[in-house]
Image 1 (spheres, rainbow, N blue to C red):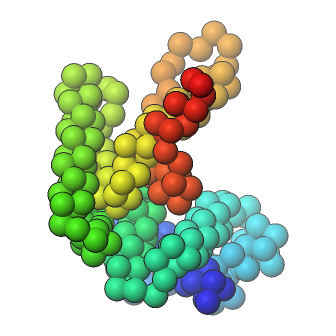
Image 2 (cartoon, rainbow, N blue to C red):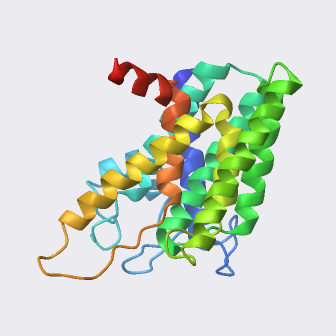
Amino acid sequence: MEIIFFVLGAIVASFVGVISGRLYTGQGFLTGRSRCDACNSSLPPSALVPVFSFLLSRGKSLCCGAKISAVSPTTEVLLGCLFVLAYINLGVTPELLLFLVSLSVLLSLVLYDLSHQILPSSLLIIFVVSSGLSRFLMSPLISEFFHTFITAILIGTSLALIHYASSGRAMGLADAPLAFGLSLFVGPSALSGFIFSFWIGAIIGIAMLLRRPRGSRMGVEVPFAPYLAAGFLLAYFTQWNIFAIIEASLL
């Protein structure tokens, strides 16, 4: 079953890449041939097999030999692994379907944010709704879901306040509903995921600053959605409790 879910995740990731690339461009998601980014030629079916096409072509386009970005195969492997982890954690249940939908939409949001530094409201709504429904199904008690919902509001509100306090320079306003949806998505792991997001963002941000040309005064502007996704997913799938980690380090 793990292989089936990995293949399913890779296929879905390939389709998600199409969605994030064509959203708001006027192109259809189910119609129109995929084309080479370098020469605009139509790609044959053999070039569209998730992961394997990239490996068999050695990372080069079959039509013109141009180097292919590793983003697509990387996201296909990533979502495939996340689908497997979700199946291991939840089994074949109704909530698993909603969980997989949320993972797929989250990947689309991250890819779109990396390309355009903005989060589409249509995808945000789908993510929040699917995450809320999956968390409701996974909560054994209504009180537990209510606690998660309040935590999600507090986390989302905190990011909205950061946005307004910094006049939008620190982060975009759309990060607030994304964090709200992620909090619903991971449930009890929300606070740990929230803190992990800032830690991951800080580490990568410092690394980017250190790689700047010497003497450069230009700032580094990066989308925060990938850090939010990474932090919350890390907390959920590892079940690392940040407060327990801090407490253990102080003893």
